[in-house]
Length: 338
Image (tube, rainbow, N blue to C red; front, side, top):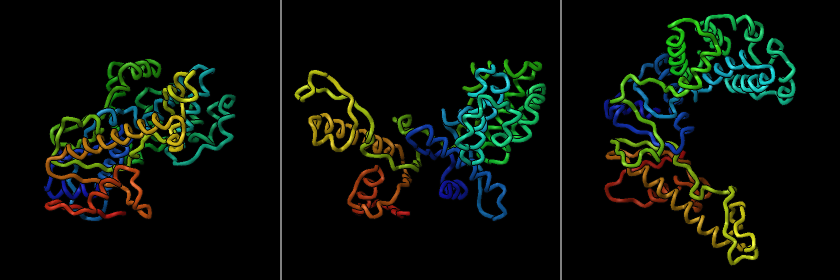
């Protein structure tokens, strides 16, 4: 975020020239949450430094339902209208999501108490005011109820939630504009339509884009940033894959599931193992190639340093570091291993 802010604030690059590539929507959400929190911190900071706000665009990573604060609100609404036989499930979701906000672990003995304990007696596990007013708040208009839940869980105090909370409030306001329809009707609408809504963007032409490497195929950007260049080259370690047993002592079984690990290279399944190993390395290299060739001018990659195991090449970033140890005419690189 520091580098991104310097580029945009100095005018070296416009936000729309920059794309951040990640491997998964989870990584995209992490990046977006960090950028939003960083911008919020810079807005309120007393330290004077160049800062120019910018938009961030993405796809599924910006779905409102993917934000943990929104999940907590929806789970609480579902708990309020859930049949008795399903209430333990929603109590568990609320307790888990609330403790995630607190960055605390749920006590081990809590789960056994949820089924028989009314919400009003869950004060150690949920906010005191929510437990005390659980039934009273259900009678409030939906707008007021949502505001009470936001305040009760202290969701407004975390910068990474603010954009999602603003968008969710707007959705609730639009839903109730034609009259008060109640919690159940809202949850029905949410399941059919609301959960597919994404954060709105004020400017789709000049915004930093965050997308998966897979979706970037065929696209090009002036600047590409790869913040998590640390995926395993052999990405299937300790997973299960199916092996043809032909020409092995187990051929009567035709195919069997085996645990993918290095010792298979010394077993009857060595051929299948090395074929899978080659496929995994090729797939990882292709991913790195696609990511690195999306840029027109500037490629910015962050990866862990190799440390003591410099001879070991196990993640994508190791390949970059190895390549940069050999100077190439006209190539400027920063290999700060921190």
